[in-house]
Image (cartoon, rainbow, N blue to C red; front, side, top):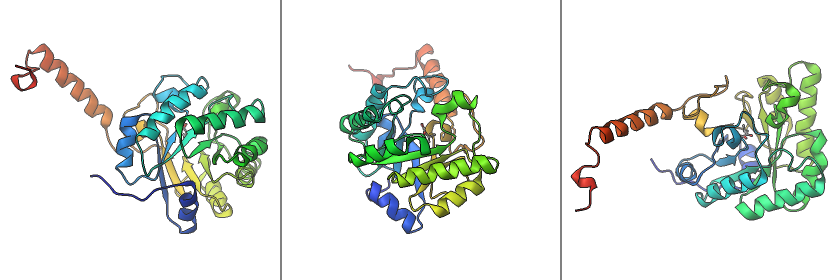
Length: 270
Ligand code: KIV
């Protein structure tokens, strides 16, 4: 079913929180899937650096480059009209100097024509976010479990458990808001902490593994479709079993080719 939807922008994101409307977001990395999400009622797309895992087969997101994000980001933008597109800034594209961060954020915006960029981190990148926003580039923050810090964590682990850790995540979210971000992703934090942050901030929180009280939710599309099965985090719900459907279609094709039954006359030029 195709859905007509109104345009989602950085401004309507904020308005949705003010009106108590929940926000839906999915990752996407290609034109064909972007067209399908555009035809759904989902509000926003994240071209996440998770493309390192699901598109490129890396064990984490660390090897993803600005050029990768631009290639995949531009493909997604070409597939949408009313769906907001946020593109991740990859590891080491904003950590070295603020000048380099602004330049890379600008490149991503100019070369993909996305609506905003997303950066991982809180208090430590407050000034970086502020300078990117000051350059006219909308920023979505990302705090809690930030996958680009996987080596520091020693694995993908829930963050914000215990008073000290919770306070750190809380202050990170506040810092991101104060720096001028229009929204913030809360990843893998206890639901109670995410709820408290959501009630305190005036910008929308988008949760992934952060409970139901966030203003919105985001999932990796291949996870929620049952298409990417390298690992299945607790917070993923499979809304379809697309992997099974694809595997069955591949086998049916193979059988038809090998049985001499494909192509038929209908599929052949006379
Ligand atoms: O890269 C990504 O897909 C993300 C989401 C998990 C929030 O950052």
